[in-house]
Each structure stands twice: as C-alpha cells, then as structure tokens.
Length: 181
Image 1 (cartoon, one colour):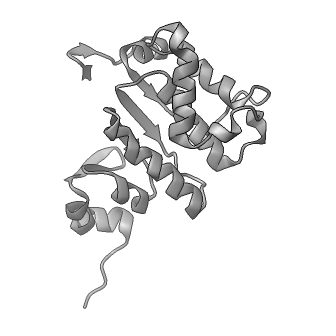
Image 2 (tube, rainbow, N blue to C red):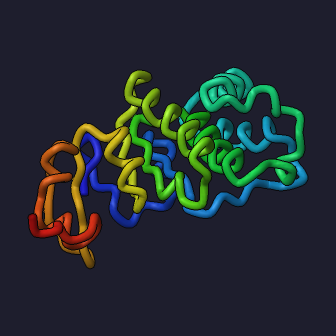
Image 3 (tube, rainbow, N blue to C red):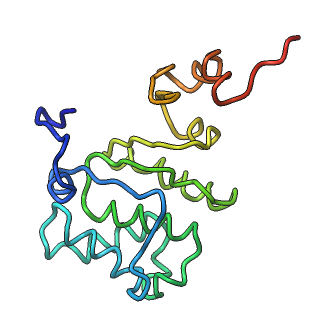
C-alpha cells in the first residue's frame, strides 16, 4: 500500500502519524487520570505539526468533536460515546491527511451515534480523507460516498451507497435476504 507514492506497510505508528496517517482504536482507552484536553495534547505533541502549535490543535480538535466543555474533566469520567469522540479528537490533533476510523459507532446509543456521525461528516470538509470501518450499516450509508464491502476478507462490492444497498451479495451477507414478493 502506498501513501503519496511511498510504502506504508510495516511502518511503525509514530512514522505513519508523522506522515499524516492516524487511526482510532475500536475500544477507546484514554489516559483516565489525565484531563480530556491533556489526552488530546498527547495526540498533538506526537503529530506532525510544530510542537508549539499543540495547544491550539488540541483546542480545535475539542471544538470539532464537541468536547470543549469537558476539557478539564478527567477522561475517566467520560461516557462511552464521549470516549469515542475523545479518540477522534486525539487523531485530529495530530494534523492528519488520512483518518482511519475503526468502529467508532460500536456500542453507542442513537444520540451518541448521531453526534459521532456529525463529526465524521465534517472531516472531509476540513480536507481529510476518511476510511471508515464499521458494522453499523445505517451509519456507513449515512456518511460514506463510496463503500467497499468485505465478507470474510474478500471484497464483494464497491460503489456508492445506493448501489451497495441493492447489491444481492451485500444483502445476503449483511442486510438480510430479500423476501420473495
């Protein structure tokens, strides 16, 4: 796999982050005793921006994710949905070009899911490319302009959401078999 013409496979995460590639983790594990803002500063300081830009980058990421009002709260006090947003904020603070989201809506209630999806929709507007891995098909369909569907590691469909929703292999594998009419 290439990014800007150079291989990325096998590179350690810190090198990928410095090149502009960053990802969330499926299970958010913040530094619980640190504040929300300090958790985001960790991302900012390990990112590809100037170190002195860290506080500004962290505050921007908190604003984008709606966590600014919780900046001083200990991360351990966050709900699951807020922890997922914190994961995204840490990624944003690195200054990424390519954001890899790993099941950021997993385990969230509908209100939390809606909030996370609003943030995801904002990322391309800010010049980021997003690759979103998710089992929640409603979430994927609502934010993605192109979807590649894998079944047991094999790509079975690739295209716009409308085409994916009508694809027989996708329906059989993920959406449920069509009822005969």
